[in-house]
Amino acid sequence: MKRSKAFISTFLLALFVYLFMTLAAGRSMVEGSILWSVEELVLGISIALIVGAVASNILCRSDNYRMLNPARWIIMLVYSVPLFIEMVKANFDVAYRVITGKIEPGIVKITPDLKTDLGVTFLANSITLTPGTLTVDVDDEKSELYIHWIKVGENPTETISGRFVPWIRRFAE
Image 1: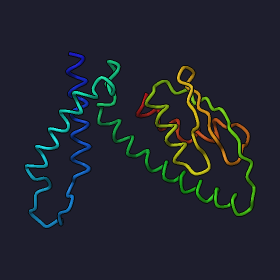
Image 2 (image 1 turned 45 degrees about the vertical axis):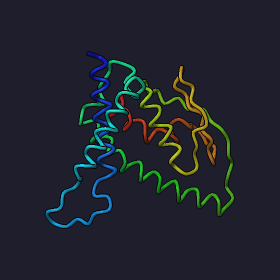
Image 3 (image 1 turned 120 degrees about the vertical axis):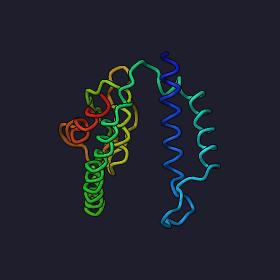
């Protein structure tokens, strides 16, 4: 039963990603036009079956299927708004620091206290997407991240990850 849930979850995720990526590809949005041709649907299902068979053991290593909850996906989409805002603010901060020369780079260790691999991965990617910071390494056992920071300051955990962690906890834990 566990393997069938893992296969079905991976299959549906792969099919959704394929259909989203090919949505109206190369077609004009004329009223009454169909979104996908039969060939595209057959190809998408075929690719999703292969991905499901190959990657289900990788994507679903535990019995926890909490990410199948649609509410978590909605929260994840809403999370993109504060992430974008922080990216814009960081762009202006990096531009200011480059122009004024107020750069004191260094590597800091942060401990965000996230319990899942998905949460730590999302945080590491969010930090890397934000200009002025780069995730260099992750300690899997302690869930600690090592971050290269353009302006090392006080309380790096709160300054770097404090704005992301509450959002990530809502959908990843």
